[in-house]
Image 1 (cartoon, one colour):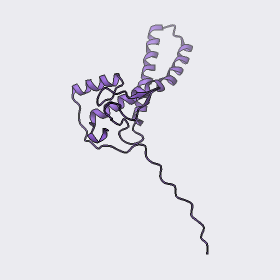
Image 2 (cartoon, rainbow, N blue to C red):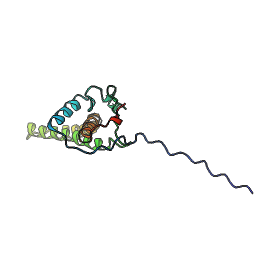
Image 3 (tube, rainbow, N blue to C red):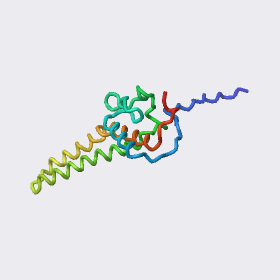
Length: 153
């Protein structure tokens, strides 16, 4: 008696990144915060401050070219919070620009210009602010969860 062959089992897709460390959380000092802010503004590695974090049009490098820190430190959704942070910062800039425009042009506010400007600004804000938000997200993470030797190559 022939049994129908069961369909071949597909292996689970590999995860993009496994957790590299479970270092304890710590409160950073003022000097660490200042150093982290400086490195974030320069778009440099939060660990060594020398290697570039971004590649090309805002994509994140896999590792620092200088110290070897893997930038996606936990799972494949590591930068999920950075998307929210980037959207928040980008929309905050649009809202502040709207407020300044209202204050400067009052009472002859150019409502049509504002309608189109805010719409276009809101659409453009996320792709422009997201790469910077990822660098800030990475910097904050390394400040509160220090880099462990096993994360470096």
